[in-house]
Image (cartoon, rainbow, N blue to C red; front, side, top):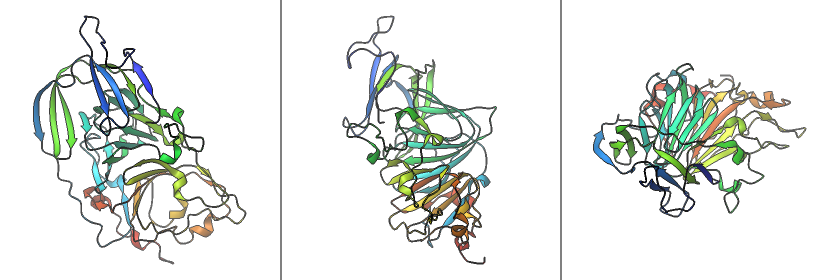
Length: 388
């Protein structure tokens, strides 16, 4: 995280006595990344967060992936995937490599308590609303929100039953996710040329306290999934401070960077993680050179696979491809791609776009999961043919 926050009650000095009303000590916990060398936060628990009563293995559903072979561009219609379950266990795995996994979820059930010990998670909310409850506090979410959940943060999803089912794109990384380094000062402040600032990032505003005993928490780790049963409810933190905590960022707060001629996709970058970049395409004015061509040029990402999730708009440059709301395209390294036939000429003279999309680029090839196989449009690879 790029800035320091303090929530709830904490002592004046770190690692000093902090007593409860009955005279007993609150229990201090440091949650930190990369040993003691990167971002961290200090939490103050009512009960020891180490008190386990039982540990049980969990049988996880096999979601085997297969290589994108023969190599081809692909189109997945996520709105065809089955509905039901909760945002943790009912994810349909679309694509994965050694650096990340990309899944899609649609459903309306609340989740169990969960933490991902393999890396950070990013959840983009396409539809629906609810509350992300975490050991740091609660965060309300709605369409357009990115939820950023650092590794090993205990959390659960509470879905609003009065809303539409939640639809979400989920990225699990094998490292830590944050703003692009070029947007940050040496001290971690978001700079003036960044397309968003600290005011746009919203973390928990107050502690979230729950009582309970024999509380189950499901832990995803590199060996599988394990269930921890804690003596006390982990949501017992009366205060915390630091740079590490879950937060949300609305895609509607992303300020697009435009120019006289077409700008490269890097101007849309929003987050990065090891081997992965995330971009936000939002409504914006088109290029204003008198001879500008607003449609993107054909391009070959020779070092990356490009994934685009089409959220809203008319997707002008993809007309005739079958792309629709909820579609996901995969343009792999080795494939030159670009606008569909006729869309370059059609874009000339247009003032702007209302399109909304999320792009994930990876620097290792993506394998295909069962969610991709269940939602693929097999005709997509041929949609660039003239006169089709």
